[in-house]
Length: 180
Ligand code: SAM
Figure 1 (cartoon, rainbow, N blue to C red):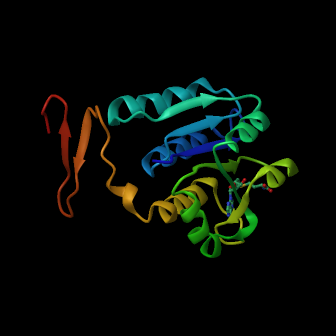
Figure 2: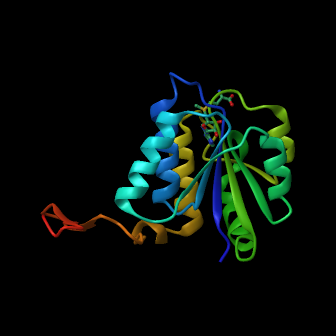
């Protein structure tokens, strides 16, 4: 089964801690297998590891300084999609992307601040989630949800210490030690 990885390009150490953590958690919760950061931030790493440890699964966290090499190497086995408000509309390209995803991995790139021109050139697709500026978290969530057509909202994670039983009128939580 092909997999999705997310490359978070850039991260401003003080300003972006929370949003970068949200990018990683959104990637995990909506079906990606790995997040790659280009800037080291121990507190973001710890927050993500804590969620994985409690809520399960084998979501990977990696820091890669040479992101150009990472993208070029990835292209040997998959397609690279850069999410940008300047890109082609997701509505038009998603059927083609979903078709390629049958046998190729996907690397989704999202930015923190201005994204270098090279990224636009290295990407196989520059895709917009509408052509208005909004957020990398929103862009990533919509892209993944469209790609997986809602299926990953039912994901079950191995080795979870805590699980939620969906309910429209109650809060039902199952913990490893069976305490509610
Ligand atoms: N000002 C930056 C620039 O010119 O590249 C964009 C900053 S934006 C807050 C951070 C990231 O959110 C972008 O790099 C892009 O990945 C994502 N993003 C924001 N709006 C988007 C949209 N309409 N479609 C797709 N991605 C979007």
